[in-house]
Length: 393
Image (cartoon, rainbow, N blue to C red; front, side, top):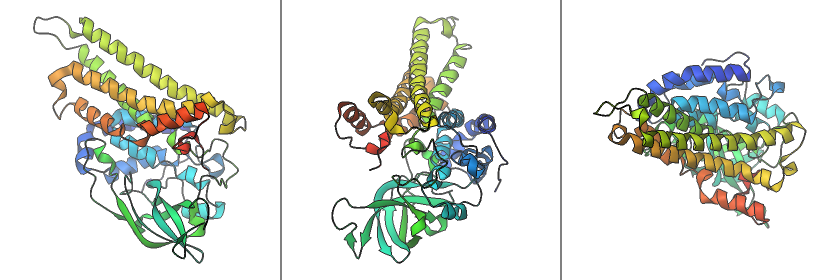
C-alpha cells in the first residue's frame, strides 16, 4: 500500500491529471476485469483522492466540494469507471465526522483508508449488548471489492421488533471491515463495467455501537463544509469529465478528417453546428453545478448551514447534478451520431462513453425522484428523497 505524503488540493488535482492518460490506456482492461485492478487502486490512493474528506484537524487536505469535483473530472477524463469508484470511495473523511472521534481515530489509522458500500437501509440490525448484529444483502456496492471498510444502511430491530416501537422505524449506517463482507460476482452491465458495483452480503456480524452513524448527528465540530448530502456533491464530475473527453476527441478528429472529395471535415456546417451546440450545453451544465456549489460554499464558509440557503439555492443543488448527468449523455449521443460508423467499434472510445453515460443516467441522481424532490422543495411540498436536499430527518 502506497501512503501519500501530506498533500494540498492542488497536489491531488495535479496527480489526478497525471494519472488520467494511463486510465485511458487501460480502460478496456478495467472494463474487462469488471473492477479496478489492484495497482490502479493503489495509484488512485497515491493521488490522495481517498483522503479528500479529511479535515485539516486530521492532517487532511479538507478539499472543498468544488476542488473534489475538479479531481473527479480529471480522473473521468481518463476513465469513467475509475473516477466513479474513486468518488464513491473518497468519503471516509466525511463519514468520520459522524462517528465518535475516538472510534474514528481507531478505525482510520491513516488518511488513505477506502470506504465503500450502499447507504439505503435494506439490511437488518438487531440490537445487542454494546452494538448490533447486522445481516442483509445490498446492491450496487461500488468499490466493495477493493475497499477497507464497508458502510451499509439497515433498519434497527429490538427483540425482533422494529425499533422504536412506535413512530418511524429507526435506520442507521453501519461500518464493517471488508473481511466480514461477502461479495457476489454479478456486476455484468452495459456501462461503468469496471466499477465492481456488485451485490454483497453481511451475515450476523457484530457492529459496535460506535461504528454506527446517522447523518442527523454530526459529531466532529471541525466540519463547516459537512452536511448530510456532502457525499453527493462531486459525483457530477464523472459525467462532466466524460463529456469533456468526448468533445476533445471529436474536435481532434475534425482537424485531420477529410471527406472523399478532399473537403475538410472541420469545414462542414453540420459538424461545426453540432460541436458548438455540445460545447454550449457542456459549459452551461458545468457552470450550473459549479455555481450551485460556489454559493453553498460561501454560506458554509460563513458558518452557515443548508438552511441558510434560499429555497431556490437549495433546490438547484440536486437539480444541477441531475442536469449534468443528462446533458453529458446527450452530448455523447450527439457526438456518437456525428461520427456515425466510426463510433460503433469497441476500439472507439465513443462506444465506451456512450455505454458509460447511458448507465450512469440510471443512477438515482439522474432520475425523476430528484426532479420531484427539487420541485416539491420549490413549491413547499414533501420531497420524496429529502437527503438530496440535505434533509436527513
